[in-house]
Length: 58
Ligand SMILES: [Zn+2]
Image 1 (cartoon, rainbow, N blue to C red):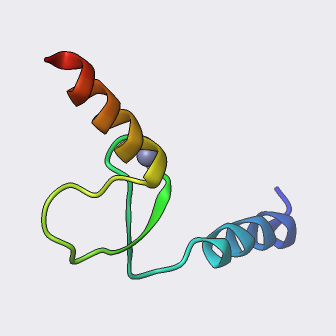
Image 2 (spheres, helix red, strand yellow):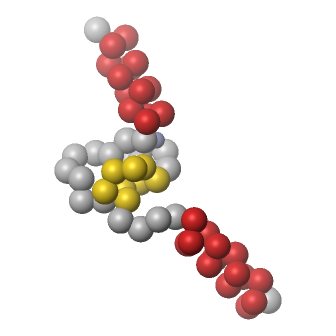
């Protein structure tokens, strides 16, 4: 409807998400790792949960 309002919201969202960083494969949160990092990228929270799951899986 209002192009000005919609464009402003999109612009703010894009501005808050830095480019060049990979998103967490679990929750989609942006991580501090570069997007060209090999393997699956996990944010600190998901990495911790993955470690806990692996530890308890034995
Ligand atoms: Zn995550």
